[in-house]
Image (cartoon, rainbow, N blue to C red; front, side):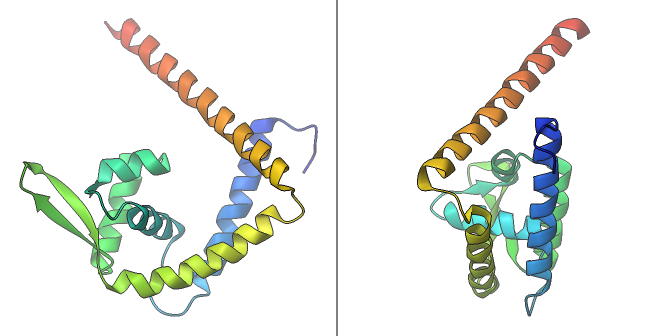
Length: 159
C-alpha cells in the first residue's frame, strides 16, 4: 500500500483486509458457520445484555443499513442464535435476544478476535494506538457531519 495514496482508499484497503481475515478465521471454526456480521451483532448484544436491544440499535452501533441488518437478523433467527420478542410498551417493536446456543460460539469467536486484535496492534506503542483511535474517531466524525449536512441540504432542496 502506498503511503502517498488517498486516505479513503487506504482505509478501504485495510477494511477489506480485516474483513477477509476475520471471515477466514470464523469460517475455519468448528460448529455453526457464522458470518462476520453475525459475530459483530452477537458481540454488540452481549455488551448490551442489560438493555432491550432492537434492530435499530444494531444498525446505529454498526453503522449499517436497515436492509443489511434485517437480512442478518433473519438469518440468525433461522440459525437459532437470536429471537425476536415483542415488548409490552410498543406492539410494533421486537427486541432481539440471544439464545443459549450463542454462548459457546461466542467464546470461540472472542478467542479468534483477541488473537486477531493482537496481530493488528503488533509493533504499536500504547500512545500510538491511542492516537490512531483518535484519528479514526475524527475521520468518522467528519464523515457523519458531512453526511448530515448533505441530508439537510437535500431536504431543503426537496421542499
